[in-house]
Image 1 (tube, rainbow, N blue to C red):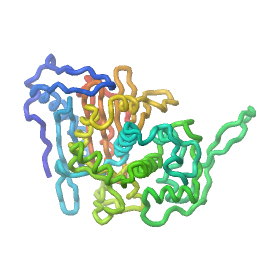
Image 2: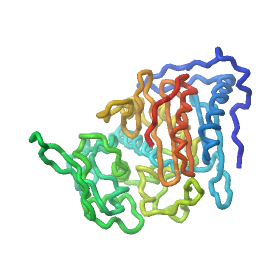
Image 3: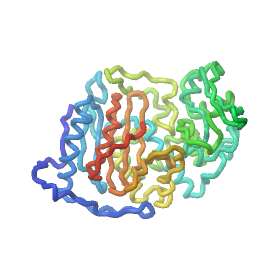
Length: 405
């Protein structure tokens, strides 16, 4: 097991407060970012601030995983701590891929925008244009990307049991309103190991009740991105894991990343509960698009840099992705196209966390400061999400905002 290290290994005491580095670049999303290299002294400064936070927020609280903090595309802090395989005591290294769970949605969304730029689809296209037997009307690709489809979550209806149904009724004032009610025992759930096509077939056969009408409200739902992966397959005529490898991971230099699918079940490696009990393989573990990208902190930093540079989608498309579409409730939280947003007065924080079984992921991007925090773990630890507040190192402001898991 490795001990944590500071990059570079220098003393914080060398720097006075007056030496706090300033951001070299003022960026707008509408242009590719050209980084100005940061100095060794600036790296030392940021590392010296991250290190004690890392210890108190993660190491002292049972962290098992990997972390990178980067500024202007350069790593200022990096560490790998704990076990990839607890039973065999295999240590986590820079090449250890973690299941990044819902952080996978950032890849799916950007692939959809990439295909849009190629003229192969339109965000306003109806889902039924690509999936003709899809049993719900008037849902667009954009509705899926923004979680405004109103669809039920396959994680629930594939398990069977109760469902949420929307009915229309009059209230005491005589106004017709939508009301949710629980319907129990409608289906027995899916039997076997489910694929994305199985999710679609189950919806066609059983038509689980919607949560809301299309484009009415924000309702975070994994079904949306499982369907987007199927649309990508329809448009490209290539299965999603292969398309991701050939068109995203390899071209962008993400050397340890891949999409887990039913073809990989023999190579399944468990994540862990806090007491190191392994999570067993389950029937929904092969559905992708909403999850199932495996990656490393270094690969995700490479992905981050590719986005800043406009290497995969244009700055204009990124601007669309980082625009909030679902701010019905008061507050800073919003959702773009496959990205969560915290809309602060001074800047918008673009991020996406993830959870699946024992896997936790944080991928937080401070656009104004061109800084990134990436944390991955394979032993469930809720402190990983709170540790995203390390971003205060780059902003100089105390972060009091709670990100959404």
